[in-house]
Image (cartoon, rainbow, N blue to C red; front, side, top):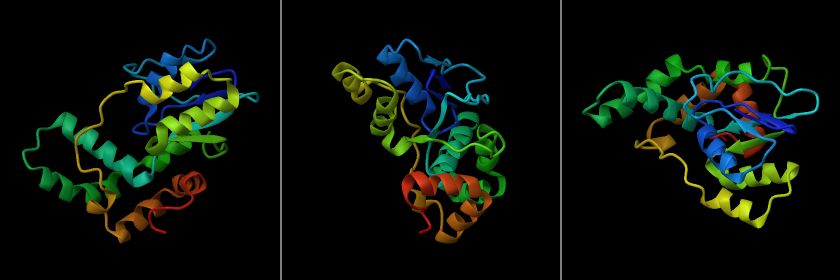
Length: 193
């Protein structure tokens, strides 16, 4: 998580939170604190006070659940057949995904809405735009945002449409109406539109 006098950015798993923290730590902004990326409770709930905005790290729902699926599957078991793992992904996700529960707990059980989102697909430009609302960033800090190394992405087929049918995407969004609402707000549409 990231806490500033101006905003709170909780770390929702598989939405770029570790990369955001690595970049922010490199900027040298003295009034921002971050949880350690190896910290077990880096995903704990934290709410803004009345003087802070809520900022979310965010990702399109199908991309987030695929990342979570492969993160757990590839880190716990050796799969010799990636095609079999890929074939099971959508079915497993539709049955067990709890993205809505994960998100709503960061929104004080649905009471809060984010002022800004740092979308993982546009992480560096969104992070720079968000921080610029609260801080006067130097040219050097802007260069750090663009160039700071972050951890590697997991290796798997990231193609949403090679995992999900259109019908499955509709089902996924129906299971997560708050996620769909926020995704529509900050992306302009859902992948079913």
